[in-house]
Image (cartoon, rainbow, N blue to C red):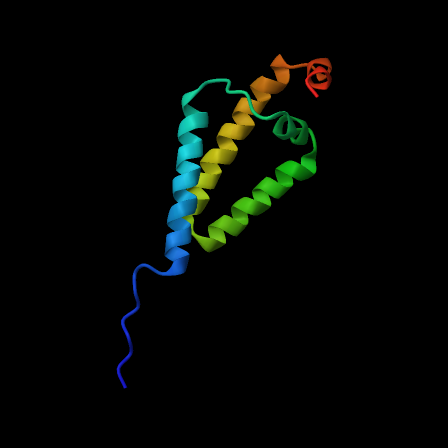
Length: 100
């Protein structure tokens, strides 16, 4: 009995392509604008160390799943952390409470 050739376009490959495309778009938007404002929820979450640990954990899961996804996610996390430092300095806690 012949084995069927494995198709290049599997469901996993299609999902990986979609995720890479989404992260590429996100990186293009966030990386091209210096000091881009993030949603207040992402700014508030940054102060908790568990949030940053979860981001690293998510990166390790992406590394295990797909290297291209992991690269795009690493760029996304890098831009988020670098921009959030600037954002945290620009906004005070009072400003964040006023906007709620």
